[in-house]
Every structure is written in C-alpha cells, then in structure tokens.
Amino acid sequence: MATTGQSGCESESHVLFSSPRYTDKPQARFAPRRFLASQLDSGGVFFFLTGDLNLLINCWPSSSSSSSSHQRIKMALNVFDHDEYRPPVWKSYLYQLQQEAPHPRRLTCTCEVNNRPKYYGREYHGMISREEADQSLSQAEGSYLIRESQRQPGTYTLALRFGNQTRNFRLYHDGKHFVGEKRFESIHDLVTDGLITLYIETKAAEYIAKMTINPIYEHVGYTTLNQEPTLKKHLPLSPQAPDGPAPAKDDCNAEERLTSLVRRATLRESDLAPKYEKVHNFKVHTFRGPHWCEYCANFMWGLIAQGVKCADCGLNVHKQCSKVVPNDCQPDLRHVKKVYSCDLTTLVKAHNAKRPMVVDMCIQEIEARGLESEGLYRISGFSELIEDVKLAFDRDGEKADISSNTYEDINIIAGALKLYFRELPIPLITYDAYPHFIETAKISDPEKRLESLNEALKLLPPAHCESLRYLMGHLKRVTQCQKENLMPSENLGIVFGPTLMRAPDLDAMTALNDIRYQRLVVEMLITNEDVLF
Image (spheres, rainbow, N blue to C red):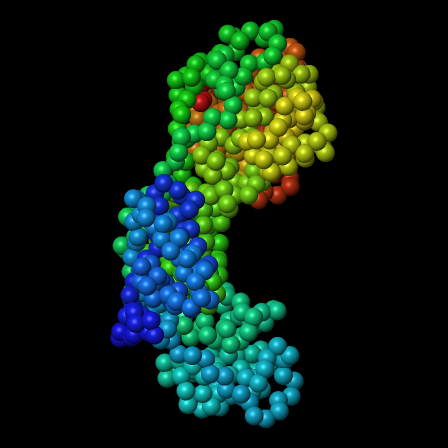
C-alpha cells in the first residue's frame, strides 16, 4: 500500500533496498551503505527501504536542524558516481514478514507468588498447569507467561501463544535468558525474537529453504572484489639466491649453494600474489539496524544473532548461507590487526603476499649477516628482545626495523622467526597433514619414504606449502655453512621439528614419542629440498 509522507514523496514498504559495491576497492565494498547509515536520522528510512539516494535528498526535511545531514548526504552521492558501481537488489519479503510478526504481550500475575526467582518479573505465575496457562493465554496472539513445572519443580517454562495454540519452552538462566542458542538480557527481548522467528519460519519455510539457489554473491557481490593486486616486493632479492640474499662472507661459495631447486625457483617466481584459497572465518554476530545477507540478498531477521560475520573480511550472511559460501575470503587489514598468532593464509591474503612478511624479512636478515653464526637457531636470543621484535611486527608490519642497528645479535632475529612459527594457530605442517608426515618418517625404504613425503606435502594449504618451501631452501643454505655454524640438518631437525609440527589432540605419551619423528620429517625436508619442492 503506497503512502504519502509530509514531504510529499511516495514510498512503499516493499520497495527493494540497494547497497553499493566497488570492484576496485575491496576494503571499501560496504562503506557507502554503512557511511550513510551513520548519517541518517528518521528521514533515512527512504534510503533503507528504496535505496534511492536522490529520493532521500529530495524528501529530506528543509529545517535548519537537518541542513548539515542534508549536506553530508549530498556529499555521499559522489561516492556512488563510480563507473564500476553495480547495486545489487536486496529482497524485502522477509523484512515485511518481520514487520507483520505478532508483538509480545506480557500476561502479568495479579496475585503474590511465593519464591519467585529474582530474575523474573510479574510474568511469573508460579506452579500452574499447562491447562491453566493455555486458558490464560487464549485471549491474544503473542501473549506469554512463565510458570514453574509441576512435573519437575525448580525448572521453569515459557508458555507462549502463537498460531492459536500455546507453545511451551524450557527456560534457562545463566545471567541471561535463553531457550536455545541465543541469549537475551530480558524475557521481553527473548519473546520478541521468538515470535519473529516462529512467524517467519512458519510463513516462509519453503522460501527460506530455497534462499541459496540463486545468490547475488556470484554476480554483483563479493567475488568481483577479489582482484588481488600486484604482489608487494618487500625487499630486493640477491641475484645469488632467489629466495634470499647471500651471506655476507665469501667463504661459502655461492655457486655451490645454488641447488637445482633454487634455479627452478628463479623461473617460477612471479610478480603476482598466488590466489590462495581461504575459508571464511564466520562468527555469530548481532547486527544493529536492518541488515541483508550478502550471499542471498534476503533480510536477516531477528533481534540478536541474526547471522554470521567473517572476522577476517567482514562478509555478512545468514548462518545457513555460510555453509555454501565459496572459500574465497579476502581478509581486510581492518580486521586483521596483528601478525603473530594470526592464521598464515589469512595474513598473506590480507597483505597480498606470497609468504608472511616475518618469514621473508627474518630469513633475508639472517642470510645477509648470520649464516655462519655458530649455533644459529640453537642458541637463544634474549627473550625480552625477541618479544620486542614480535611487537614491532604486530605494530609496524613490513616497516618493522630488524636491522643490525636495532638488533645486533642475529639470534634475536632467529628467535623471532621460530616464535612466529610456534604461535601459528594452525601449525605450518597442519593438523590434518600431521599423521601422514609422521607415518612417512616411520618408513624405512628411502624411495618409498620420499614418495610418501611428496604426497604428504600435497595435503598442505598452498600458503603453508609455499612458506615451507621458502624455509627449507633457507635451512638448506644454513647446512651448507655447517663448518662455521655447526648446524647440520640433524641439529636443525631437532630445533624445528616441534616448532613446525604439533600433535593434534594426542595424549602426552604419544606426543612425546612423536618428537623423534618430527625431527626426521624436518631433516628429510631439508636434505631433499631440491627434489620435493
């Protein structure tokens, strides 16, 4: 039904809502919608229901109190004048249903009730039967009360009138009220959300089941934004070693260190960041104000926990839609706020890099001035200074200063690199691949062991495999200076085995027994580096 407001502008409650997206700035893909939402007062309903900014400008009140907002909206129009702007259509059917859902009606108890729990109000009726509750609630849709169970004293039931029948739900309280996954500050909010959910899922069950069939996601949504820019070149690479600069001293002959792997890597190095696949990191989220799913374009209903939000890229979708969203998360630096303890794939995608900058920068610094340092990686640096390096990377990223002017002891840089690998939430050799690597180390036949190791590497995510390749090439060069640094592959295996591999949920005894196999895995990777990668 069309209505005419005081401003003389016509609008309809079912008119579709549009939200801008940009193909050249992933980090700003939802900025216009969110910017405008932050600027609007009650007049903003025109934008949220129609998506028509010009209508919003024309209908905006002309009073002086709103003139500043009026100007801000005019300025915001410039944001939408982008050649590549493609507004998707947001579907309003579920939004309409939420507006039509019955409102909660608290049925208060007129008499004094003994032993009423302190977290319930006058809606608590004490120990009454289902029949009494049904009779009391039969007057109005959406009416509710709380009663103590007669069958199980000490437990409480929410009786709610919906669909001309009384529904009973076991009610819990742990500081917040809940009957399922969602937790609410008040019973009123719980009932409001419950009525919305019941109404929508009753009226639109078939529609909801088919929401994901024709998503907007693939046409005008997130996938058009994932055009990864040219890979940043953090530091110049030495012509002697494509994976890092050569050591400062000339004693280790550079030509001897050029294995066939390094030569092949020279040809394989690309200026474009690889398109690593990454699963979205969805978390249950409560959205303020109307929100639409960025996969299916349908309204996200309810008062709280209406859907899920990717903690790495900010994508907002229904919980059921999250199960079919492609694994194409493009992390946003606004969400990825640290370097250490951050998922490896998330970090490299957020920075459009091949490998974490910690790995690149630390290895290049070590190879520039520390390959012949005795006990490299075995001797620990000062823990306080290693922590300083960590904080520098978390704070400054690729601008962190780890030069000899700041940290003269190369063991501090080596310690920071080991700490990075230890603090990865998913180890460099992942939990999923761990059993295969351990079983490989137990094989006695050299050829079969090498073949099995090659198969195990295929189980690693691409970003993990690339970082492992780069690290093993570096450790191979460390062993080529073992006369000076006293660090053959056996010693490096002892140091890096537990650093790169962690047993997934194994008992202490099994994990202890695995240590020797972890050492063998790293030793095999170093020794066969030029064949495996």
